[in-house]
Every structure is written in structure tokens, then in C-alpha cells.
Amino acid sequence: MDVVRTTMDLTDGLGADVVFEAAGSQPTTQATVKIVRRGGRIVWTRMAPECEFAIPVSEIIAKEVRISGQFRYANTYPTAIRFVSERRVDLRSMTTDTFAFHEIATALERCAAREPEIIKAVVRI
Image 1 (cartoon, rainbow, N blue to C red):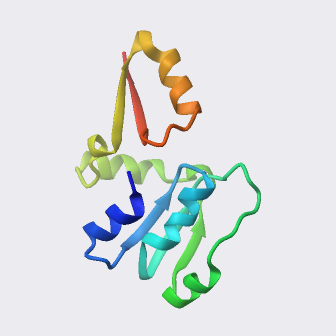
Image 2: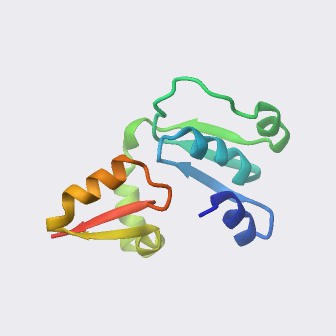
């Protein structure tokens, strides 16, 4: 899945108002700058294994983007739970893989390998 192309297609080329990065990888962190709209906001919630990597600062400035960090989802659970209960967030659309409980080893291996087609996996009990 090409997140940048999909996001830009869905927003008619404008980009997203707010972009949350929660995967903690260099490519997804860099992609946030590409998919946020001018004057938008980026929230980085996960630390990438690499301490430093290239970010297009000139694009951030030109777009007048606000970037903030949220350490380990502090104080966000009540809001997230409310958004899900109010159906403001469609969790099913984010789930790309479902595993039976007896497949938990496979699920963990595939997620740990960071297979690009897996966005979120669910293990059913």
C-alpha cells in the first residue's frame, strides 16, 4: 500500500489535516511530511529505532506544519476510547490481518518482521 499516494488521492491532493505516526519507522515518519496538508499538524507517537535520520525541513517550513511528539500515548486513551465508542474512528479499516489464537506465533513473527502489507494485526481469542 502506498500511503502517500492513497492519502493524496483521498484528499484530492491537499493532504491530511492531522497525521499521526505510530509505527516508529523511518519511512513512515518521513511520509508524514509528504501527506500532511499546508498548515496541518503531525503528531509523532513512536520512537524510531534510528536516533537520527533525514527529514525535509524546507518542506515542513514551506507547508507551515506544526509537529509535536506524544510520548507513549500519555493521556490519550480516554480520548481514543471515546472516539471509537462514538464511531468517529473505523478500526476495522485499519486491520489488515486477523489470526486465530493458535496462530499467535505466526502473527508475532510476521509483525516483528515488519512486513509492509501488515498495518495492524488482530489475534482473536
